[in-house]
Figure 1 (tube, rainbow, N blue to C red):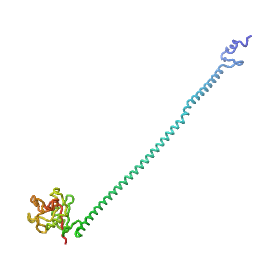
Figure 2: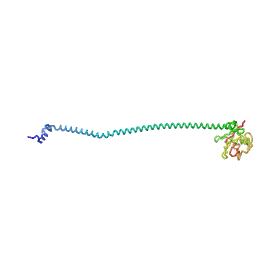
Figure 3: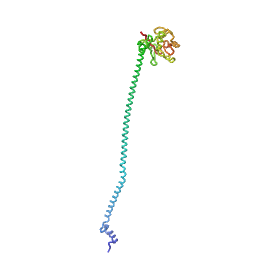
Length: 296
């Protein structure tokens, strides 16, 4: 008899070989026997499934661990980006507003500049008109004064002395007239170069003529031509009305001297040294001139 509890017997019954070719290894579990190879395959498949499930579980856990900080930081990152975008938008709007303000200010400044230029031009025109009006007023006042002083007997720009009206022709800049052209100008005005018939008349006209300081005049251009020459005879001074000069106390010191043997015309120069004012000079020199028109 063989006992059921004999291990050796169980071992032999669990793992025995069939002597014939093509026999299959069997394993006995309890009262049943199963082929070995299918059972091994099933075990391997179950193990593979278990390992796959374990890998999936581990992957999910790792993914959760990895994603957790990112999911937690995402709102903060988005918030930071939104704030940066808002700041950039605000700065852009501020810059755009600054540019618009600059353009407006520049245009305003240009308008102000143009207005100032226009005002300056207008003021310059007003200043010119004012100067013209002042000059006209001065001329009118001078003419009125001349008319009043001459009791209306002389034309504007002329002065009355004794029984004649006199016109003092002034040079333009440095350009005067020689003796001949001076007389032509007087004739064109209905007069002639001045003639002092007497010393008294000389003295009366003397008071109306412009005066220069002694030593400041120029002999070459100073003084004014009058109607006195020695053309007819050297040294004999005759007025243009053919009357000989009958007084001699009004010659300047050293005059007449016929300097250079060519001085044949006479001028008058009023200085601060008294009544001595006559001098002889070359007739072609450029000077001012004195016209006289007798009252009829």
